Image: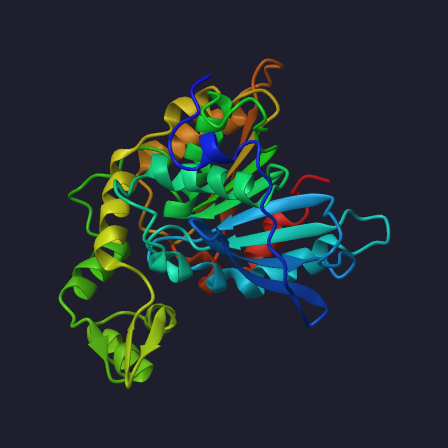
Length: 338
């Protein structure tokens, strides 16, 4: 059977387990750089339910995939709150949230073995490689924002096709957060395009985070968005530099705009629920795409197919975890798999 690229063919019969972990506000937060000397996979963090220790095998696992120019740490607060909410009763399953730094982003930007082409297929393949390298069970839920949402769709599609091997298991749920399923018009000039264009015109290093935030605000970006952009810096000597590989991230964004997953939404594999979340004030959505999603969500059940659901997050633009994290939690927590 076709195994795809990456580490899968090498690692499907190997078990390489990371270790570590520190107590943090009642939740276990661990930083790993998934690697085995010569084989490196994506960097990630773990956030666990209070009832689940670092040595316990969790009952449920969710992968959290950030959007363009972000990193796993952008989702720490939300993941802690989600894990706490889901562990509200003694009989509740123990959850592990795996906050992943996608290729070209966060700590994964430092991993030279994550080579081009930087596209949705290879970014999803990285997730499969991570599962094999860590010896984990396959994730029950994948939550992806923006570009991360399309990577989640690609992961499910490749998994259903058998690209990750016979031992791979399809997630039971995808949560796709303000990510348009189809191709994105290249003439679109939304917030994301404006941010990329601006960053490409900036120097590669800066005197301080405050300088970046102030500069972005002077250019007309909102305070919350400017602060979020400023949070994706790292110290380099006396200067600050981006915590992402901008050139690789731009290549990933081009792939994000070109890929369409309408076929997956129209024919979701049996046992899979795809929950699409549209931010009320997002500039991402064309009316035709919204109508198409509404039609799919209203479709009567077919036992041979999975299902699609549609949710609207009020009072939020594209950066859902910044604009309305409480509202997002209220949508996801009651509906996430029991």
